[in-house]
Length: 117
Image (cartoon, rainbow, N blue to C red; front, side):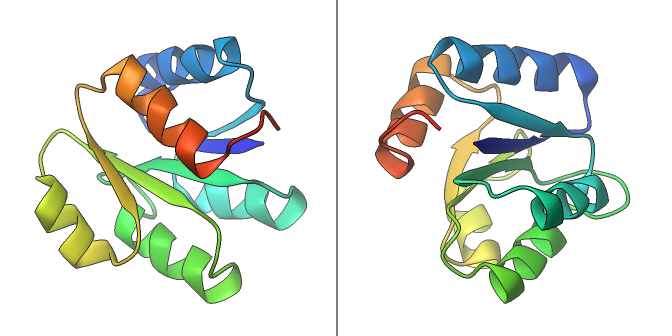
């Protein structure tokens, strides 16, 4: 199961559809607080999160996830930061710049979660 965290409805729907077509189960959250609530209730194999969001941004979400689930793979996305900046600020996470290339997204997900969940 993949938890997709994106505050823009249209982007979240598009990413979810892409992941579902690739055979992955997807939970959707509109911000980091909602994501944490879902993680408390459902085991996930991967989190994909935007960085800039209301309520709890991607960096704060990563910190909370690492405190509770240190080995959970995380992919951060942003249209405003470079890969180097995101990795320096977030530690051991993957980064995909926006606009997201669907093939790059699926390839990264398949590398982190080899089997459909």
